Length: 529
Ligand code: SIN
Image (cartoon, rainbow, N blue to C red):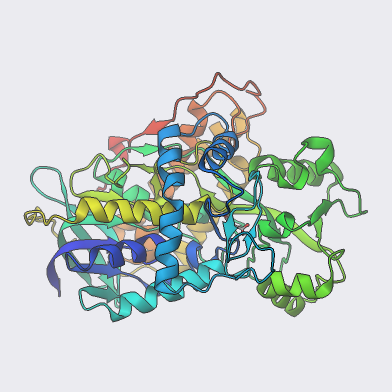
């Protein structure tokens, strides 16, 4: 052990939620923010569409609440929805004060100074955006401010592999590894998880380096309750590009008029839902999946080429440039697309200030489950949630807390290091199971088989851990296999089809409002290394 710090607040994760919290808190309390280099590839930076908020005078809070409840398919916590939506405008005003370069609306008859686009499930234009690279603009701005703040210590040399507890069971900081794999404990009065979701448990994802639920599992190890894990969102339109890196085609493309067709040019969404391409994501992703299953095609098409070429280029410069590099001119031809894992609607259960059920431990952003998204998140409500709950957590954390003293947690004796290829092979096996058996459409037999396969992977991972030195990849694998096991348990327990959880053996949609699922880490999956 080489390093030990005592800091007031420790934030794990430097996406939109972690950075927003650091900035809102640092004038009151010193903050250490762990932002490993991989955070530059996290979900926030890749978010294209924008941030949903009631900004237009032609829109109102009641409608945004109602649209969110409908998309969430009877499982949203209405109080959480109202709480979030009501604070949308002030969150956007805060971002504008920091200088986030949102796209202006230069039209003479514009009802709001910034352009507002539409996405699935929204009955109004309410998505403020920075062209088609909103996440990047947001992160660049927040990060620039965080780098300049004297009370924010940014550490890109450490990644957390577990949480520390004190004698009362409260969270007292995190165990980390540096770039050489040397462990170091950071103690903290309060620790905040802002580590992202768990889309990396699946093979095809919309961002190149998605989180695999590490933060969720670290919280569960301390006894925190996880909620709604069975609701994994698959974004309907990821670029179909078998030899390229994952690349999202924003829902805003459909919001601005893009249509989905089969390979022979037949439009299919109007037959499935009156909202057609702008139905909520669960419905559109399932419709595409069904088309692909029925035809055997590897993808479907998304066509925006009927709009003037300069409009397409102005609205979607990033998508246009990326597709052009991959040989597709979206101003002239349709875009091949497939659904891919995009967002975890479940996570660590929190209150409206980001508090988890473990003292001293907070969770904000995709790692958390606040009740906002229910069974299916509505487009662009996620960055809104990051901002609103980060700012609410900052309120709760303003008063300094007494220091916490972690229980000694001895390091294992010297062991050989593991070859990264062994860890990668295990992760591939896990992703194969999740993709084949816990995907967009599930059934009881597949879920049972997934539970068996994952139990084997958990045993094998434990054996690897007991034989090798601590290692970030190995720690992530250990977190991932157990979170996958908990996800399958949650999916097996939900004996209905609702939102993103579609089980062909239980097509019945239970009564509304539905109950959230809650799951704790089984004691026999606790750390034994
Ligand atoms: C998109 O631009 O389609 C993604 C935004 C989101 O997931 O809300």
